[in-house]
Every structure is written in C-alpha cells, then in structure tokens.
Image 1 (cartoon, rainbow, N blue to C red):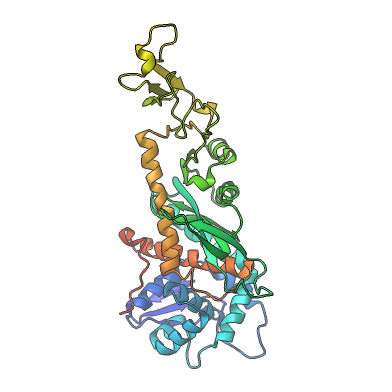
Image 2 (cartoon, one colour):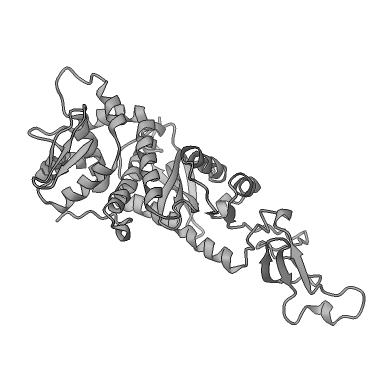
Length: 413
C-alpha cells in the first residue's frame, strides 16, 4: 500500500516488502515518478522476489531496484550502465528511488533483471491491471483496435561465430517509396492498441523471422482471455495481415469488422469478378460505383455514370445498372464494410495509432536502448517498456489529466 504525505513530500510504502520512504523534494521528475510508482500494483511481484535469499548481506531494497529500473524506461536510458551513472549524478533521482548512501553497481542491476525475467508473468499482471484501469478511465477503450509489429534488435553481432544470441533471427523491411530492403537481426514486438487513445491493449514477442499474419488472432485472443470487457467493434491492420483466417476470426469469433488492407489479388491470366478493393466489374469490365450499404441486402453498386461500351450496344447483353453484393460471399474481399466506402476509409486512417505507439516506445521508452539478448530477457524488456508507457497514462488519468495521457517526455527541470 502506498501513501503520499503532501506536507513532507514523502512517498511511504506500508507493506511487508521493506520498501523505503521516498523524498520527492518538489522536483517535477520526482513527481512524475511518484505518480507512476503509485499507479503500478506491484505487491505480488515484489513479495515473490522478496521470498528469495539473494545474498548473505542485507543488500539493497528490492523495491528500490525495481523503481530504479522503471525510472530507466521513463528517462529512456540506453543501458544499465547509463542508469548507474544517472543515479550517481542525480541525487534527487536516487532518493526518489529510495537509495541512501552507497548506490548499487551495474552487476547488482543485472542480477536483479535476471531474477525478474524468471517472473515475467507477474510483470504481465501489473500491465494487465493498468490496462483494466485505463478501460475504467476512458470511455470506449478497446473498441477500435489497430494491430502491427515492430522490430527489436538484439544486443548481439550476427556476423560473429558462434552467434551469442542463437534465438534471434533475421527479417527484412522495405521502407515506403524505397525498393531497397533493410535487414534486422533480433525479435518482433506484436502490439494491439486502442486506435482512439493510442494505448496498448495486448502484446506478444516473437523472433524476428516470424510472420505477422499468424500472430493477429492469438494477440486478440490473449486480450479476450484476460479482459472480459474486451469486445472490439473493428480491428485494423495493414496488408501484412491479409489472410482469410484473420478475416473469418475477427468477424465470427469477435463479432468485429475486419479493416485490413488488401494485397493485389488480381492475376494477368484471369478475369476476376471484383477488383482488389472488392468492387464488382460490370459486363463491360469496368469497376462499378459504390452507392450504399443495407443491413439486409448488403452493398449496392451501380454502373458508372455514362455506362460502358455495352450501354451503347444493341443486343441481349446490356451492362447491369445496379447490383447488390452480400459481405458473406467473401469476407476477405467484400467485407461487412465496403472498402471504397467513407466508413472504411475513416476506420483505416485510425491504423496510424499503432505506428505512433511503436514510435513512442522506441524514442521515449527505451525499446531500442538495451544490452539484452535471448527471447526471455527481450520479452521482459519489451514488457517493461510497455508497462511504463501504460503506467504513465494511468498516472495522468488518475489525476484527471486526460489531455496528457500520451505525454512521454519527462519533466526534469
């Protein structure tokens, strides 16, 4: 249980974990950290760690080590050594984390992280508690979900033999308007985020060579199993998730609208009925114009104004004036929301939310700054990065600062 004494600027931990009292000294950074520490329900995690006999010496308070590690993600410090230097250079930060006198070394923090990686499920529980809290604070949280992945490099040189991180693998990304591929060696963080508030809902870490598409439904099912309130109305993803299994799973298992960018489905040796946007062709082989969507009849299309060459041709084959298309005919191509409709475009533009979350994690929450290797430690590192992002949002929400939920740059003056 955490209690803050406003008259003395002290944060007291009233529990059995031996946590210290923390002097905030009126520092804006200390205030930010104090509210973050208060937002995270970490008693189960620290009680479990406290049950171990670490060394024969009294050592450092586990809560202080835990808080210092959280602070490193707030400050976007690139390594554990950078955290040690910052604690030595910033007495207010050291006091805020609960350290008095001698400060821990890099090896102490490394041992703590190794032990923490054995209990990632308890860190996940802390994150789940924050996500539930956001659902209580934010109306409609989890209604529109955007899914994507981002690469996380391993602290290993893939060109040296033997490779120090055998669990890592290669993946290639082609940047927009650039035909050259950029290769990454490491892992992938798969994210499902709320597209309205730009905050995470579900996470998963795999090796980098893992394809994105098979991870979409497990990511959503993970959220559904943890949060009874998770009932999305739309799931938005790019062309990397364009697979029939994803469309069917989103529509039938979750009752949501799949908004997934389509790859080019046409082949030069065939004459398809629809183009890649699910628009039917008229008899003159021209795409028809979308008119409306009816809850019973489906999507209505009409031959373009002026018709095609069959309109002016005498005979029995005339261009169809109007046609109704049922979404169930092909969920992947047609879908419950027509790809050319304003509603589909409005939902599709919300997909950029997950890209902004990935950017904040990398630029402000230390996702790119680490010295870890191996799936277990990288997964914990990603979890801590998301945990601090989520915890900061809850801290702002608890204070009623909904306009600053996504603020990631700490106040250090």
